Image 1 (cartoon, one colour):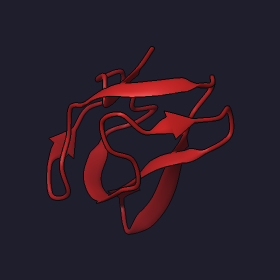
Image 2 (cartoon, one colour; image 1 turned 180 degrees about the vertical axis):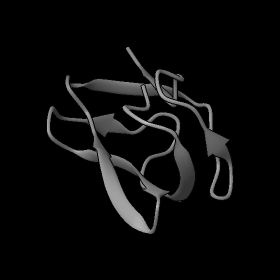
Image 3 (tube, helix red, strand yellow; image 1 turned 180 degrees about the horizontal axis):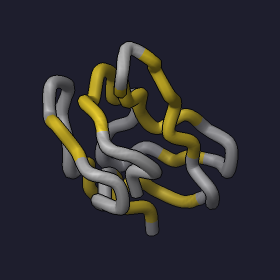
Image 4 (cartoon, helix red, strand yellow; image 1 turned 45 degrees about the vertical axis):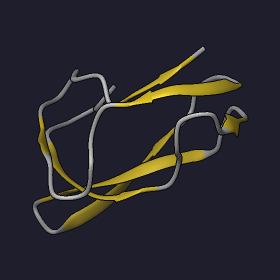
Length: 66
C-alpha cells in the first residue's frame, strides 16, 4: 500500500516475479522527493495495480503479493 500520496515514477516488479522482504517494488514521487515502496513480505507478485505516471493516494493498494 502507498504510505503517502504521490505519482508512480518507476515499477520494479512484474506479475509472476518472486520477491523477498526488503525488495523494492516501485518508486513514488511526492513534492519532488522520490520514495521507494519496499516489500514487507516474501512471496510471488500476483497483481501490479499501478503503472508509471499513475497518481496514488495514501493507503491505496499498489501490488498484490501471495
